Length: 206
Image (cartoon, rainbow, N blue to C red):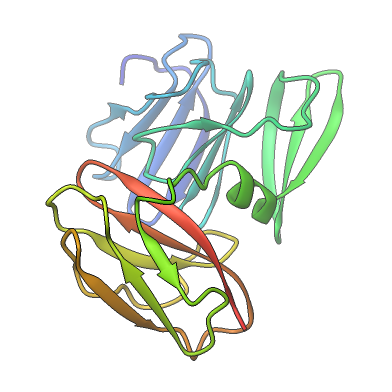
C-alpha cells in the first residue's frame, strides 16, 4: 500500500477494500487479510476516496462524485445522475437505497435498482440474448459474440446479491437454459463474465 492515510474500509466476502484520501492513491484491495494490497483504480477519475459502501457485488466509492464497480474494483463507472454537488464525504446503504453525504450539500438519495438498471447495464444487444423476457419457469441464454472463452453465468437481484446457483460454464455460441421457477416475481440481472469482459442484462420474472 503506497498510501497509509486510510479513510474508509469495506468488506465483500474475503476481499477487503481500503479508500485512501490525502495521498491521492485511490482504492486498494487485499485478498489475504491485509498481508498485501493492490491498487484498483481503473476508470476511477478521482484518487482521494472519502468513503466506501458495498451492496452484494456492487462496490461504491465516494470522493469527487460516486463511482460503482461490479468486478471487485477492476473497473469503475460514474453513477452521478442527479447529483449536483460531487464533493461526497460519506456513503451508506439502507435497504434498496444508497445515501451520500455531501460537503455543504446535505444528503443525496438514489435507489440501487435505478443505478443498476441505468448505469451498470452496458451490454450491447449483440453480446448475448435472453428469452423469453419476462420469464416464467425457464430463461434461455445464447452467447453470440463473446470471444472463444469460458463464460460464467449468474443471476443477481436488484441489490447485487446472487439470487440462484450459477449456470454451467459456457463457450461462445452455446445455449444455456436456466431454471428461474423458484425466483420470486420481480426484476433481476443476468451477468455473463469471461476473462476479458463482463456484461449484464435485465430481465423480469413473472
